[in-house]
Image 1 (cartoon, one colour):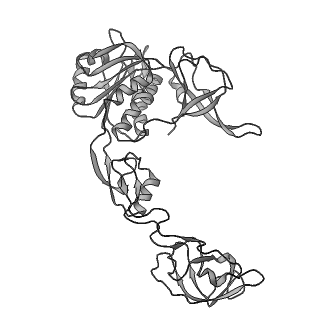
Image 2: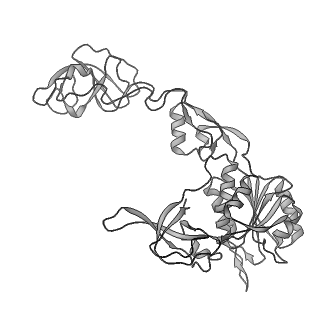
Image 3: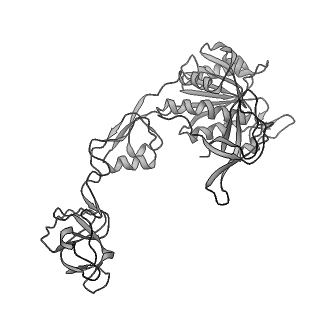
Length: 423
């Protein structure tokens, strides 16, 4: 492992990582099994949507010219010559003065050009019920009113989804509606997590002085799930360099990504840093960010990309947000790997981090100023003076405030950019 002498900005560190990860291989899956995956190629619609001119309302299919003079005080009466239901294939013919009962989504008869809503008509009984033999039309409508034209949503052959799109529920529904049965997607990274720290104990183990419950495996596994990845294996390593190095070599040949927490500092017992010293493509860096100053990343000799994160929980979470999440999305071929910052008004004062990007866990909530427009506000979820270890306060955070290195302190009422991270 090599170390950088200079201090990198967070963007420089991310750029270094993204240059060294690439999209994973392509797989073909059924549309119904593709939720949460990333599209690998553009998909063109094999059909036009709608497939045919269809009714946007329950009512009567007519020729607009036949009711051009209809009004409440001078209604017009049309003959009922048929009915078309949603899913029906019939195409009744219409002569002058004819109408066809039609339901929402049903194909509009070829001879009709307009649909009159049932609310603008009276039936045989003189009320608003459905007509059987004749219908009284009480208002004129424009040609094409309440008709959804064939292909007005999507035309056959047009691009329906683009490579890099996340396949969520709405996107998949659009593909299914257009008759797409299978799609090409990028594989999801296989990730192994290794947690280090001799002071860490499982939830059912008794705690002695100096020992704490282990939470980083829960944190990292959850963060992985939130970006569409499952932790395939989770290991709790002892603090022996030889056994950890052996474990990393094994995992490096079996996974796409290996993530570790803890043990990357300059100390004589920081076993992850020591175990990675034999890996020439892994780099240790100091990053101008608070928290999460120390970062190790690179490709293991076995092929997996390793992220060695700090052991303090909030530092690990910030590291994941800034560097790991974008890399995992890039490996899945996602076209957009960054979250979009939004402005929020600070509810309190807090000290900035001179010379470093401050990534402060915050509680973001909507507020409405008296007589003003809705807006977002944010308040620190942890004490800004001691962020990295504050796992309790971090649990309430649903965003991070991003305070640039040259900004200085934040004063209540200031606008700051935040990213929302709640799932």
